[in-house]
Amino acid sequence: MQHAAPDSIVELLPALEWTGERYLPWIRNATMSYEHLHRYGFAAQFAKGKRVLDLGSGEGYGANILARTAAYVLGVDIDPVCIQHASFKYNRRNLAFEIGTFAKVPRHPDHSFDLIVCFEAIEHTTDHNALLSEVKRLLKSDGLFIVSTPDKTAYRQEIPEGNPYHVRELELAEFHRLLMSYFRQANLLGQRIFPASSIWPLQADSISVDELSAKQGESEFEYPSDERRKPIYIIGLASDSPGAIGASGSVLIDSSMELMNETGHTIQELARTIEESNEAIDYLRQENGWYLGRIDYLNQTVERLQDCVHATNVEIETIYSSRSWAAVRKWCQFRDFVFPSGSLRKRFLQAVGAVYDRARS
Image (cartoon, rainbow, N blue to C red):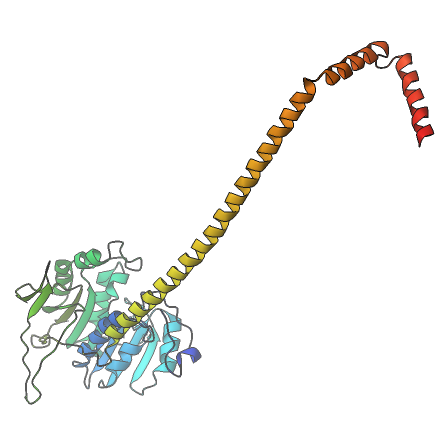
């Protein structure tokens, strides 16, 4: 479901079509928001004071997040409407947007960026090598490349019908081999949305978090569990600099509780739908009762007509079997014999009858 942003500046911007694939910040979908915003929030820790390139920047929200701390951010996207929209909406001195493809970022010399991010875009092209080659051209020798893509196996388990916008998805091992074929170092992280409770120290210089896992079993909620989480999305950090790829985990906290709110709204909508369905069923039952009554009435009418037809047939049979009908039939036979059709006598008889009729009138 799509909702306009508050005091909606979106209405003044070039229209971006909601396809279900490109993330738009004003779309009410908490799960999708968590996935996309968390990636850029995670990447922002590496962007402070750096020159950053966002490949496949889309609506521009992610480049804007990076630009809060970066020295300069360039968002590149193939869609001119996206570039026009982002340029108008996100107005920062250190932020720019340009039309370009994964394989060709225009007007920028070799090794001109400290950090390049490419989130949920590599699966939209068949030529992964062209994308990685352009990244290597633009990235500084000690720079960092952060890229995310769905894990093909896990993603297809979640969405068996597949995604029509994805042209070449990667298995986890394929993704790692691809990064290692261009960089000396590659570190993989997993991402997935889970309901979570977070406990952390409020007075500490450093925070270390141990992950505990619990799950709903067949009859009870089981804890603890030694199962490891299986990510749907893989985030790769790649660099030729040994110390550049180190990264700790990250947790996104939604202080607005939007996912729970959406669940509550969904339950309310379902309750309203059920109530409306029940009202419709009651109405149809009433209508059905009226039609059944009409059917009973018509059936009774048919039965009465059948009785009338039967009575009429009895009367006709009675007439046909009476002596008077036999006399009339013999008279008609005699008439037709004496005055055959087309004869002069027949025409004379008809003429006399006509004179008699005129005389009576």
